[in-house]
Length: 348
Image (cartoon, rainbow, N blue to C red):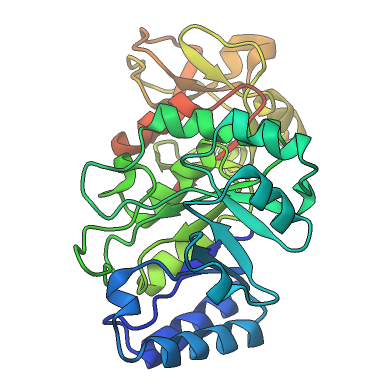
């Protein structure tokens, strides 16, 4: 995944802070830089154009794709060669199709409709030059509903369009004027940046941008670490069996056939056979709870090594060991683990 940062000229992030963020992000492998020409507090700043020029120059030097948010009124002013334009309000399908034939653009993923995309196709738009990026929402309680977001992503993916979205900084310097975070999803407003990013991955988001302009180093590192669409669950390891620990350190795929009470991994038994270790039964038989990660022990015969995530409360079974538990605040992510989707555990 080619993830990104946001930089805002003329606000209370001074030029040195902006340049430092670009350099840190480049060193961590970030590839995209979002900025906007539509924020009144920026445009009214006496330092706006000087800061804006410094941002663009530094970003180009470090190889970033620059994404500039524009509307129909200021499009001509910022029609700069080599910049990806995110076309917000005021553009009709004919204009968008024409612009796409000459340069890379991004649509507003939060408001685009299937009819509009069909119009672009009929008008001969160059879909190779088109991506989409959701809005962020500074005002509390106005971020997108998760179901709506997921449906918008599906519509865009059906047209072969990659989709990006914003996560807020929780611990860094949140952006003016409200300092309430800049998430796309309302559910993410007070999540950690790390959990927000992994939630967007679970919702089939193709690239992630930190919305606020001064995230912490830890937040930058968390987003930089997301390099694929694999869903990562933070969990507590409960087993001291080395074979179990090795199996659970690997990547899994959810089976295509959905079980009623558990998420079944494809590879657990295969990994067990490869390792050639032992998984004896636990001394205590304990009821299995929602979010538990279990592994079938040697008493389960040919099922030994099978890995499951509990989606219900199930009785204790002497053939099944409770090996780990997904952190309570992250169990909800299991609801977005679709069939055939890759997943893994990060133990804390």
